[in-house]
Amino acid sequence: MSDTEKVRAFYEGRVGDFAEPRMRIGGDGPLHSLVGPEDCEPVPAAVFEAVGFYFVNVLEQDNGSVFVFRADAGGVFTYGVLATTDGSSSHLEVYARDGTLLAAGIPDWKAGTIAWKEQDKVRRHAAMWG
Image 1: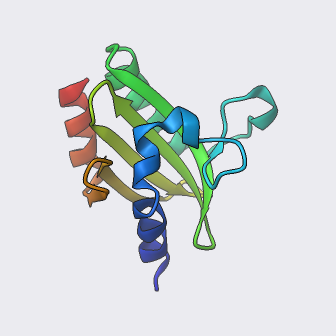
Image 2: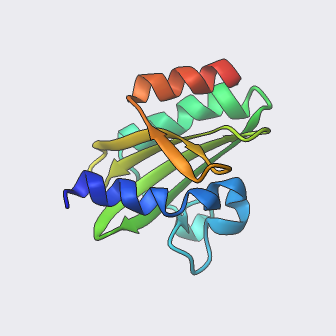
């Protein structure tokens, strides 16, 4: 199984966590929060840029929240950027330790699936809802 397949399988297996991310990201679970001062760490520029994009297009539009976390996805270190909306829409970008984009998609936690797409299509969808 390729790293991309491992990463996608990991996140697809946790798509239900994105319905209530505040209760699933952090603690002893597989999605480790990076929001507390004790958890701060330098992140690659691409991750920082993704957080900024969703901050402007989702959070500042008062349409949802933005989360950044790290996870071991089947042996592959990843950073995840998740933007949720006030409805059931969410947007996910997954990066490698060096900032390489590994996957981008639109999770549907009701259906339990992630529609994997090109990053620009995921961001256009986010901006449309933001």
